[in-house]
Amino acid sequence: MARVALVTGGTRGIGAAISKAMKAAGYKVAASYAGNDAAAEKFKAESGIPVYKWDVASFDACAAGVKQVEADLGPVDVLVNNAGITKDTAFHKMTLEQWNAVINTNLGSLFNMTRQVIEGMRARKFGRVISISSINGQKGQFGQVNYSAAKAGDIGFTKALALENAKGGITVNVICPGYINTEMVQAVPKDVLEKNVIPQIPVNRLGEPEEIARAVVFLAADEAGFITGSTLTVNGGQYHA
Ligand SMILES: NC(=O)c1ccc[n+]([C@@H]2O[C@H](COP(=O)([O-])OP(=O)(O)OC[C@H]3O[C@@H](n4cnc5c(N)ncnc54)[C@H](OP(=O)(O)O)[C@@H]3O)[C@@H](O)[C@H]2O)c1
Image 1 (tube, rainbow, N blue to C red):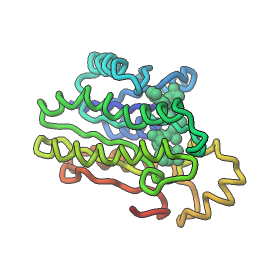
Image 2 (tube, rainbow, N blue to C red):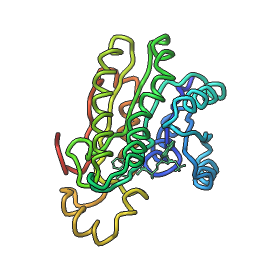
Image 3 (cartoon, protein in one colour):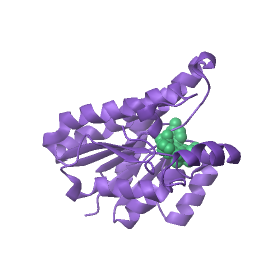
Image 4 (cartoon, rainbow, N blue to C red):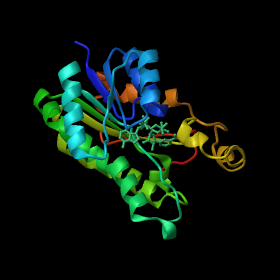
């Protein structure tokens, strides 16, 4: 029986690449998204992967969403916590709304989503929880106190949850991408990318979403059962924590 993988924010950017790579690797995949229906419908038509709309910052919405996915596809074996947002500004100008939105979407979501599936994984003695953090959660970034705090929190969440579930066949790992060629990074002005970002990357280019997807497929495999609580850096050599 094919295992079931749920990818949050799985309809665009890195998440879309993860969804497609997991499908190609033989998983039954569900991709969730927040509100961009046009992008989700286009993704679904292209990939044949079912899409589900809910807000990962809401615990109740996650409960209902996971219930629907499980009714359609079966119990979730692999959860990929990929959905994320930025709301960048210097901390001395940051509003409570900007803080809360980023913390709740990038860190609160790991509780909201993982809590829905962990009991089933424990009962079945198999599970993979893979979360997408960021290089900026490892090293900090100007204008991203909210984002860096949330992404660093993803790493602590992973280490602790891995310990609690290590004996039960469940692995919990986190991937820290560097700068990846998605809409999130394309929003950075081209001259800033060329002058300030790419020169910082030893490999001398942005990463591609498929390069993060490959790491997810690797960690999801049955053969990756001895890898848990680890932080996998995929950043072109830019930073090593
Ligand atoms: N791009 C990079 O260079 C980079 C680097 C390091 C880490 N990351 C991390 O990688 C992950 C994916 O980034 P990306 O660049 O691929 O982002 P993206 O292109 O902006 O796509 C984000 C995806 O997440 C969904 N999403 C956002 N907020 C959500 C919410 N509240 N509830 C449910 N879904 C939500 C979006 O849904 P809609 O389509 O409906 O908006 C979309 O599917 C994020 O966690 C990001 O922080 C990215």
